[in-house]
Image (cartoon, rainbow, N blue to C red; front, side):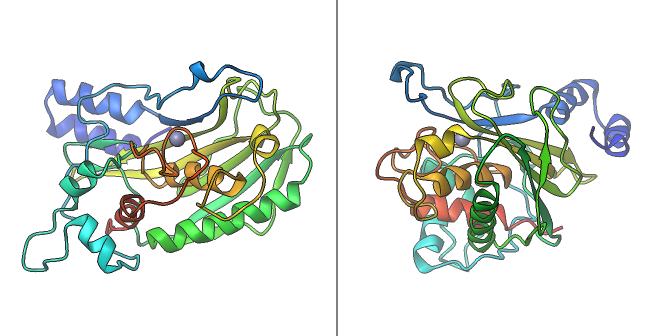
Length: 290
Ligand SMILES: [Zn+2]
């Protein structure tokens, strides 16, 4: 699934211990769960982020010298949150993001796994054929992608239409390299647990300089999102748009926030919004030069 070329390179230059460590990271598909109790389930079973591999560096903001090519507009507040207001000081958004409660999806000692910001990310959508409102949901995803694109500065191109699949269970279609594949599944799909409204998986590779780079991502969105929420403003309050944005922001490398009102919290509160830390984290997601 991942690039053998890179893996072979690592074999030649690194110790066995490191190789094992990096192999785990390479194989790891990190999953952020947007989990809520379903309407008829008890609240006590709400889930948290589940990472398939538990490494000490995961979820910490680590430094990579390529993370200075900010593509998003940085307001004074965001600059302040990122602690990069003083241009004479070395950029240090890492501690600031950590202290703000934002987390990355995956990180290694060589930085956070992010998309390189010189390429366009292709976003495509697939629907399980039983879903209704395909056109409407396709348009919603389109709008959310545009918002995430402007917050991150990452270029995203949406395919002009969607595909339908007969059934989506455990044998899921894979995203192509350089793309984010969004799959809408029916409420009883086996691809998600009964508690999950959506999940995001992110694949990354390790480049020759050690930088972890996201190569593709797959988002599963359950029909339960539509049953549970109404439509609303993107990233504001608990609605269909915000739930989709939550997953799409995972797909650009951002993990959960500890802030209970953050749209990146594991559960969307009634009063949900993009905190200044969230906005800073999204800007950071688009800061990686290729
Ligand atoms: Zn999540």
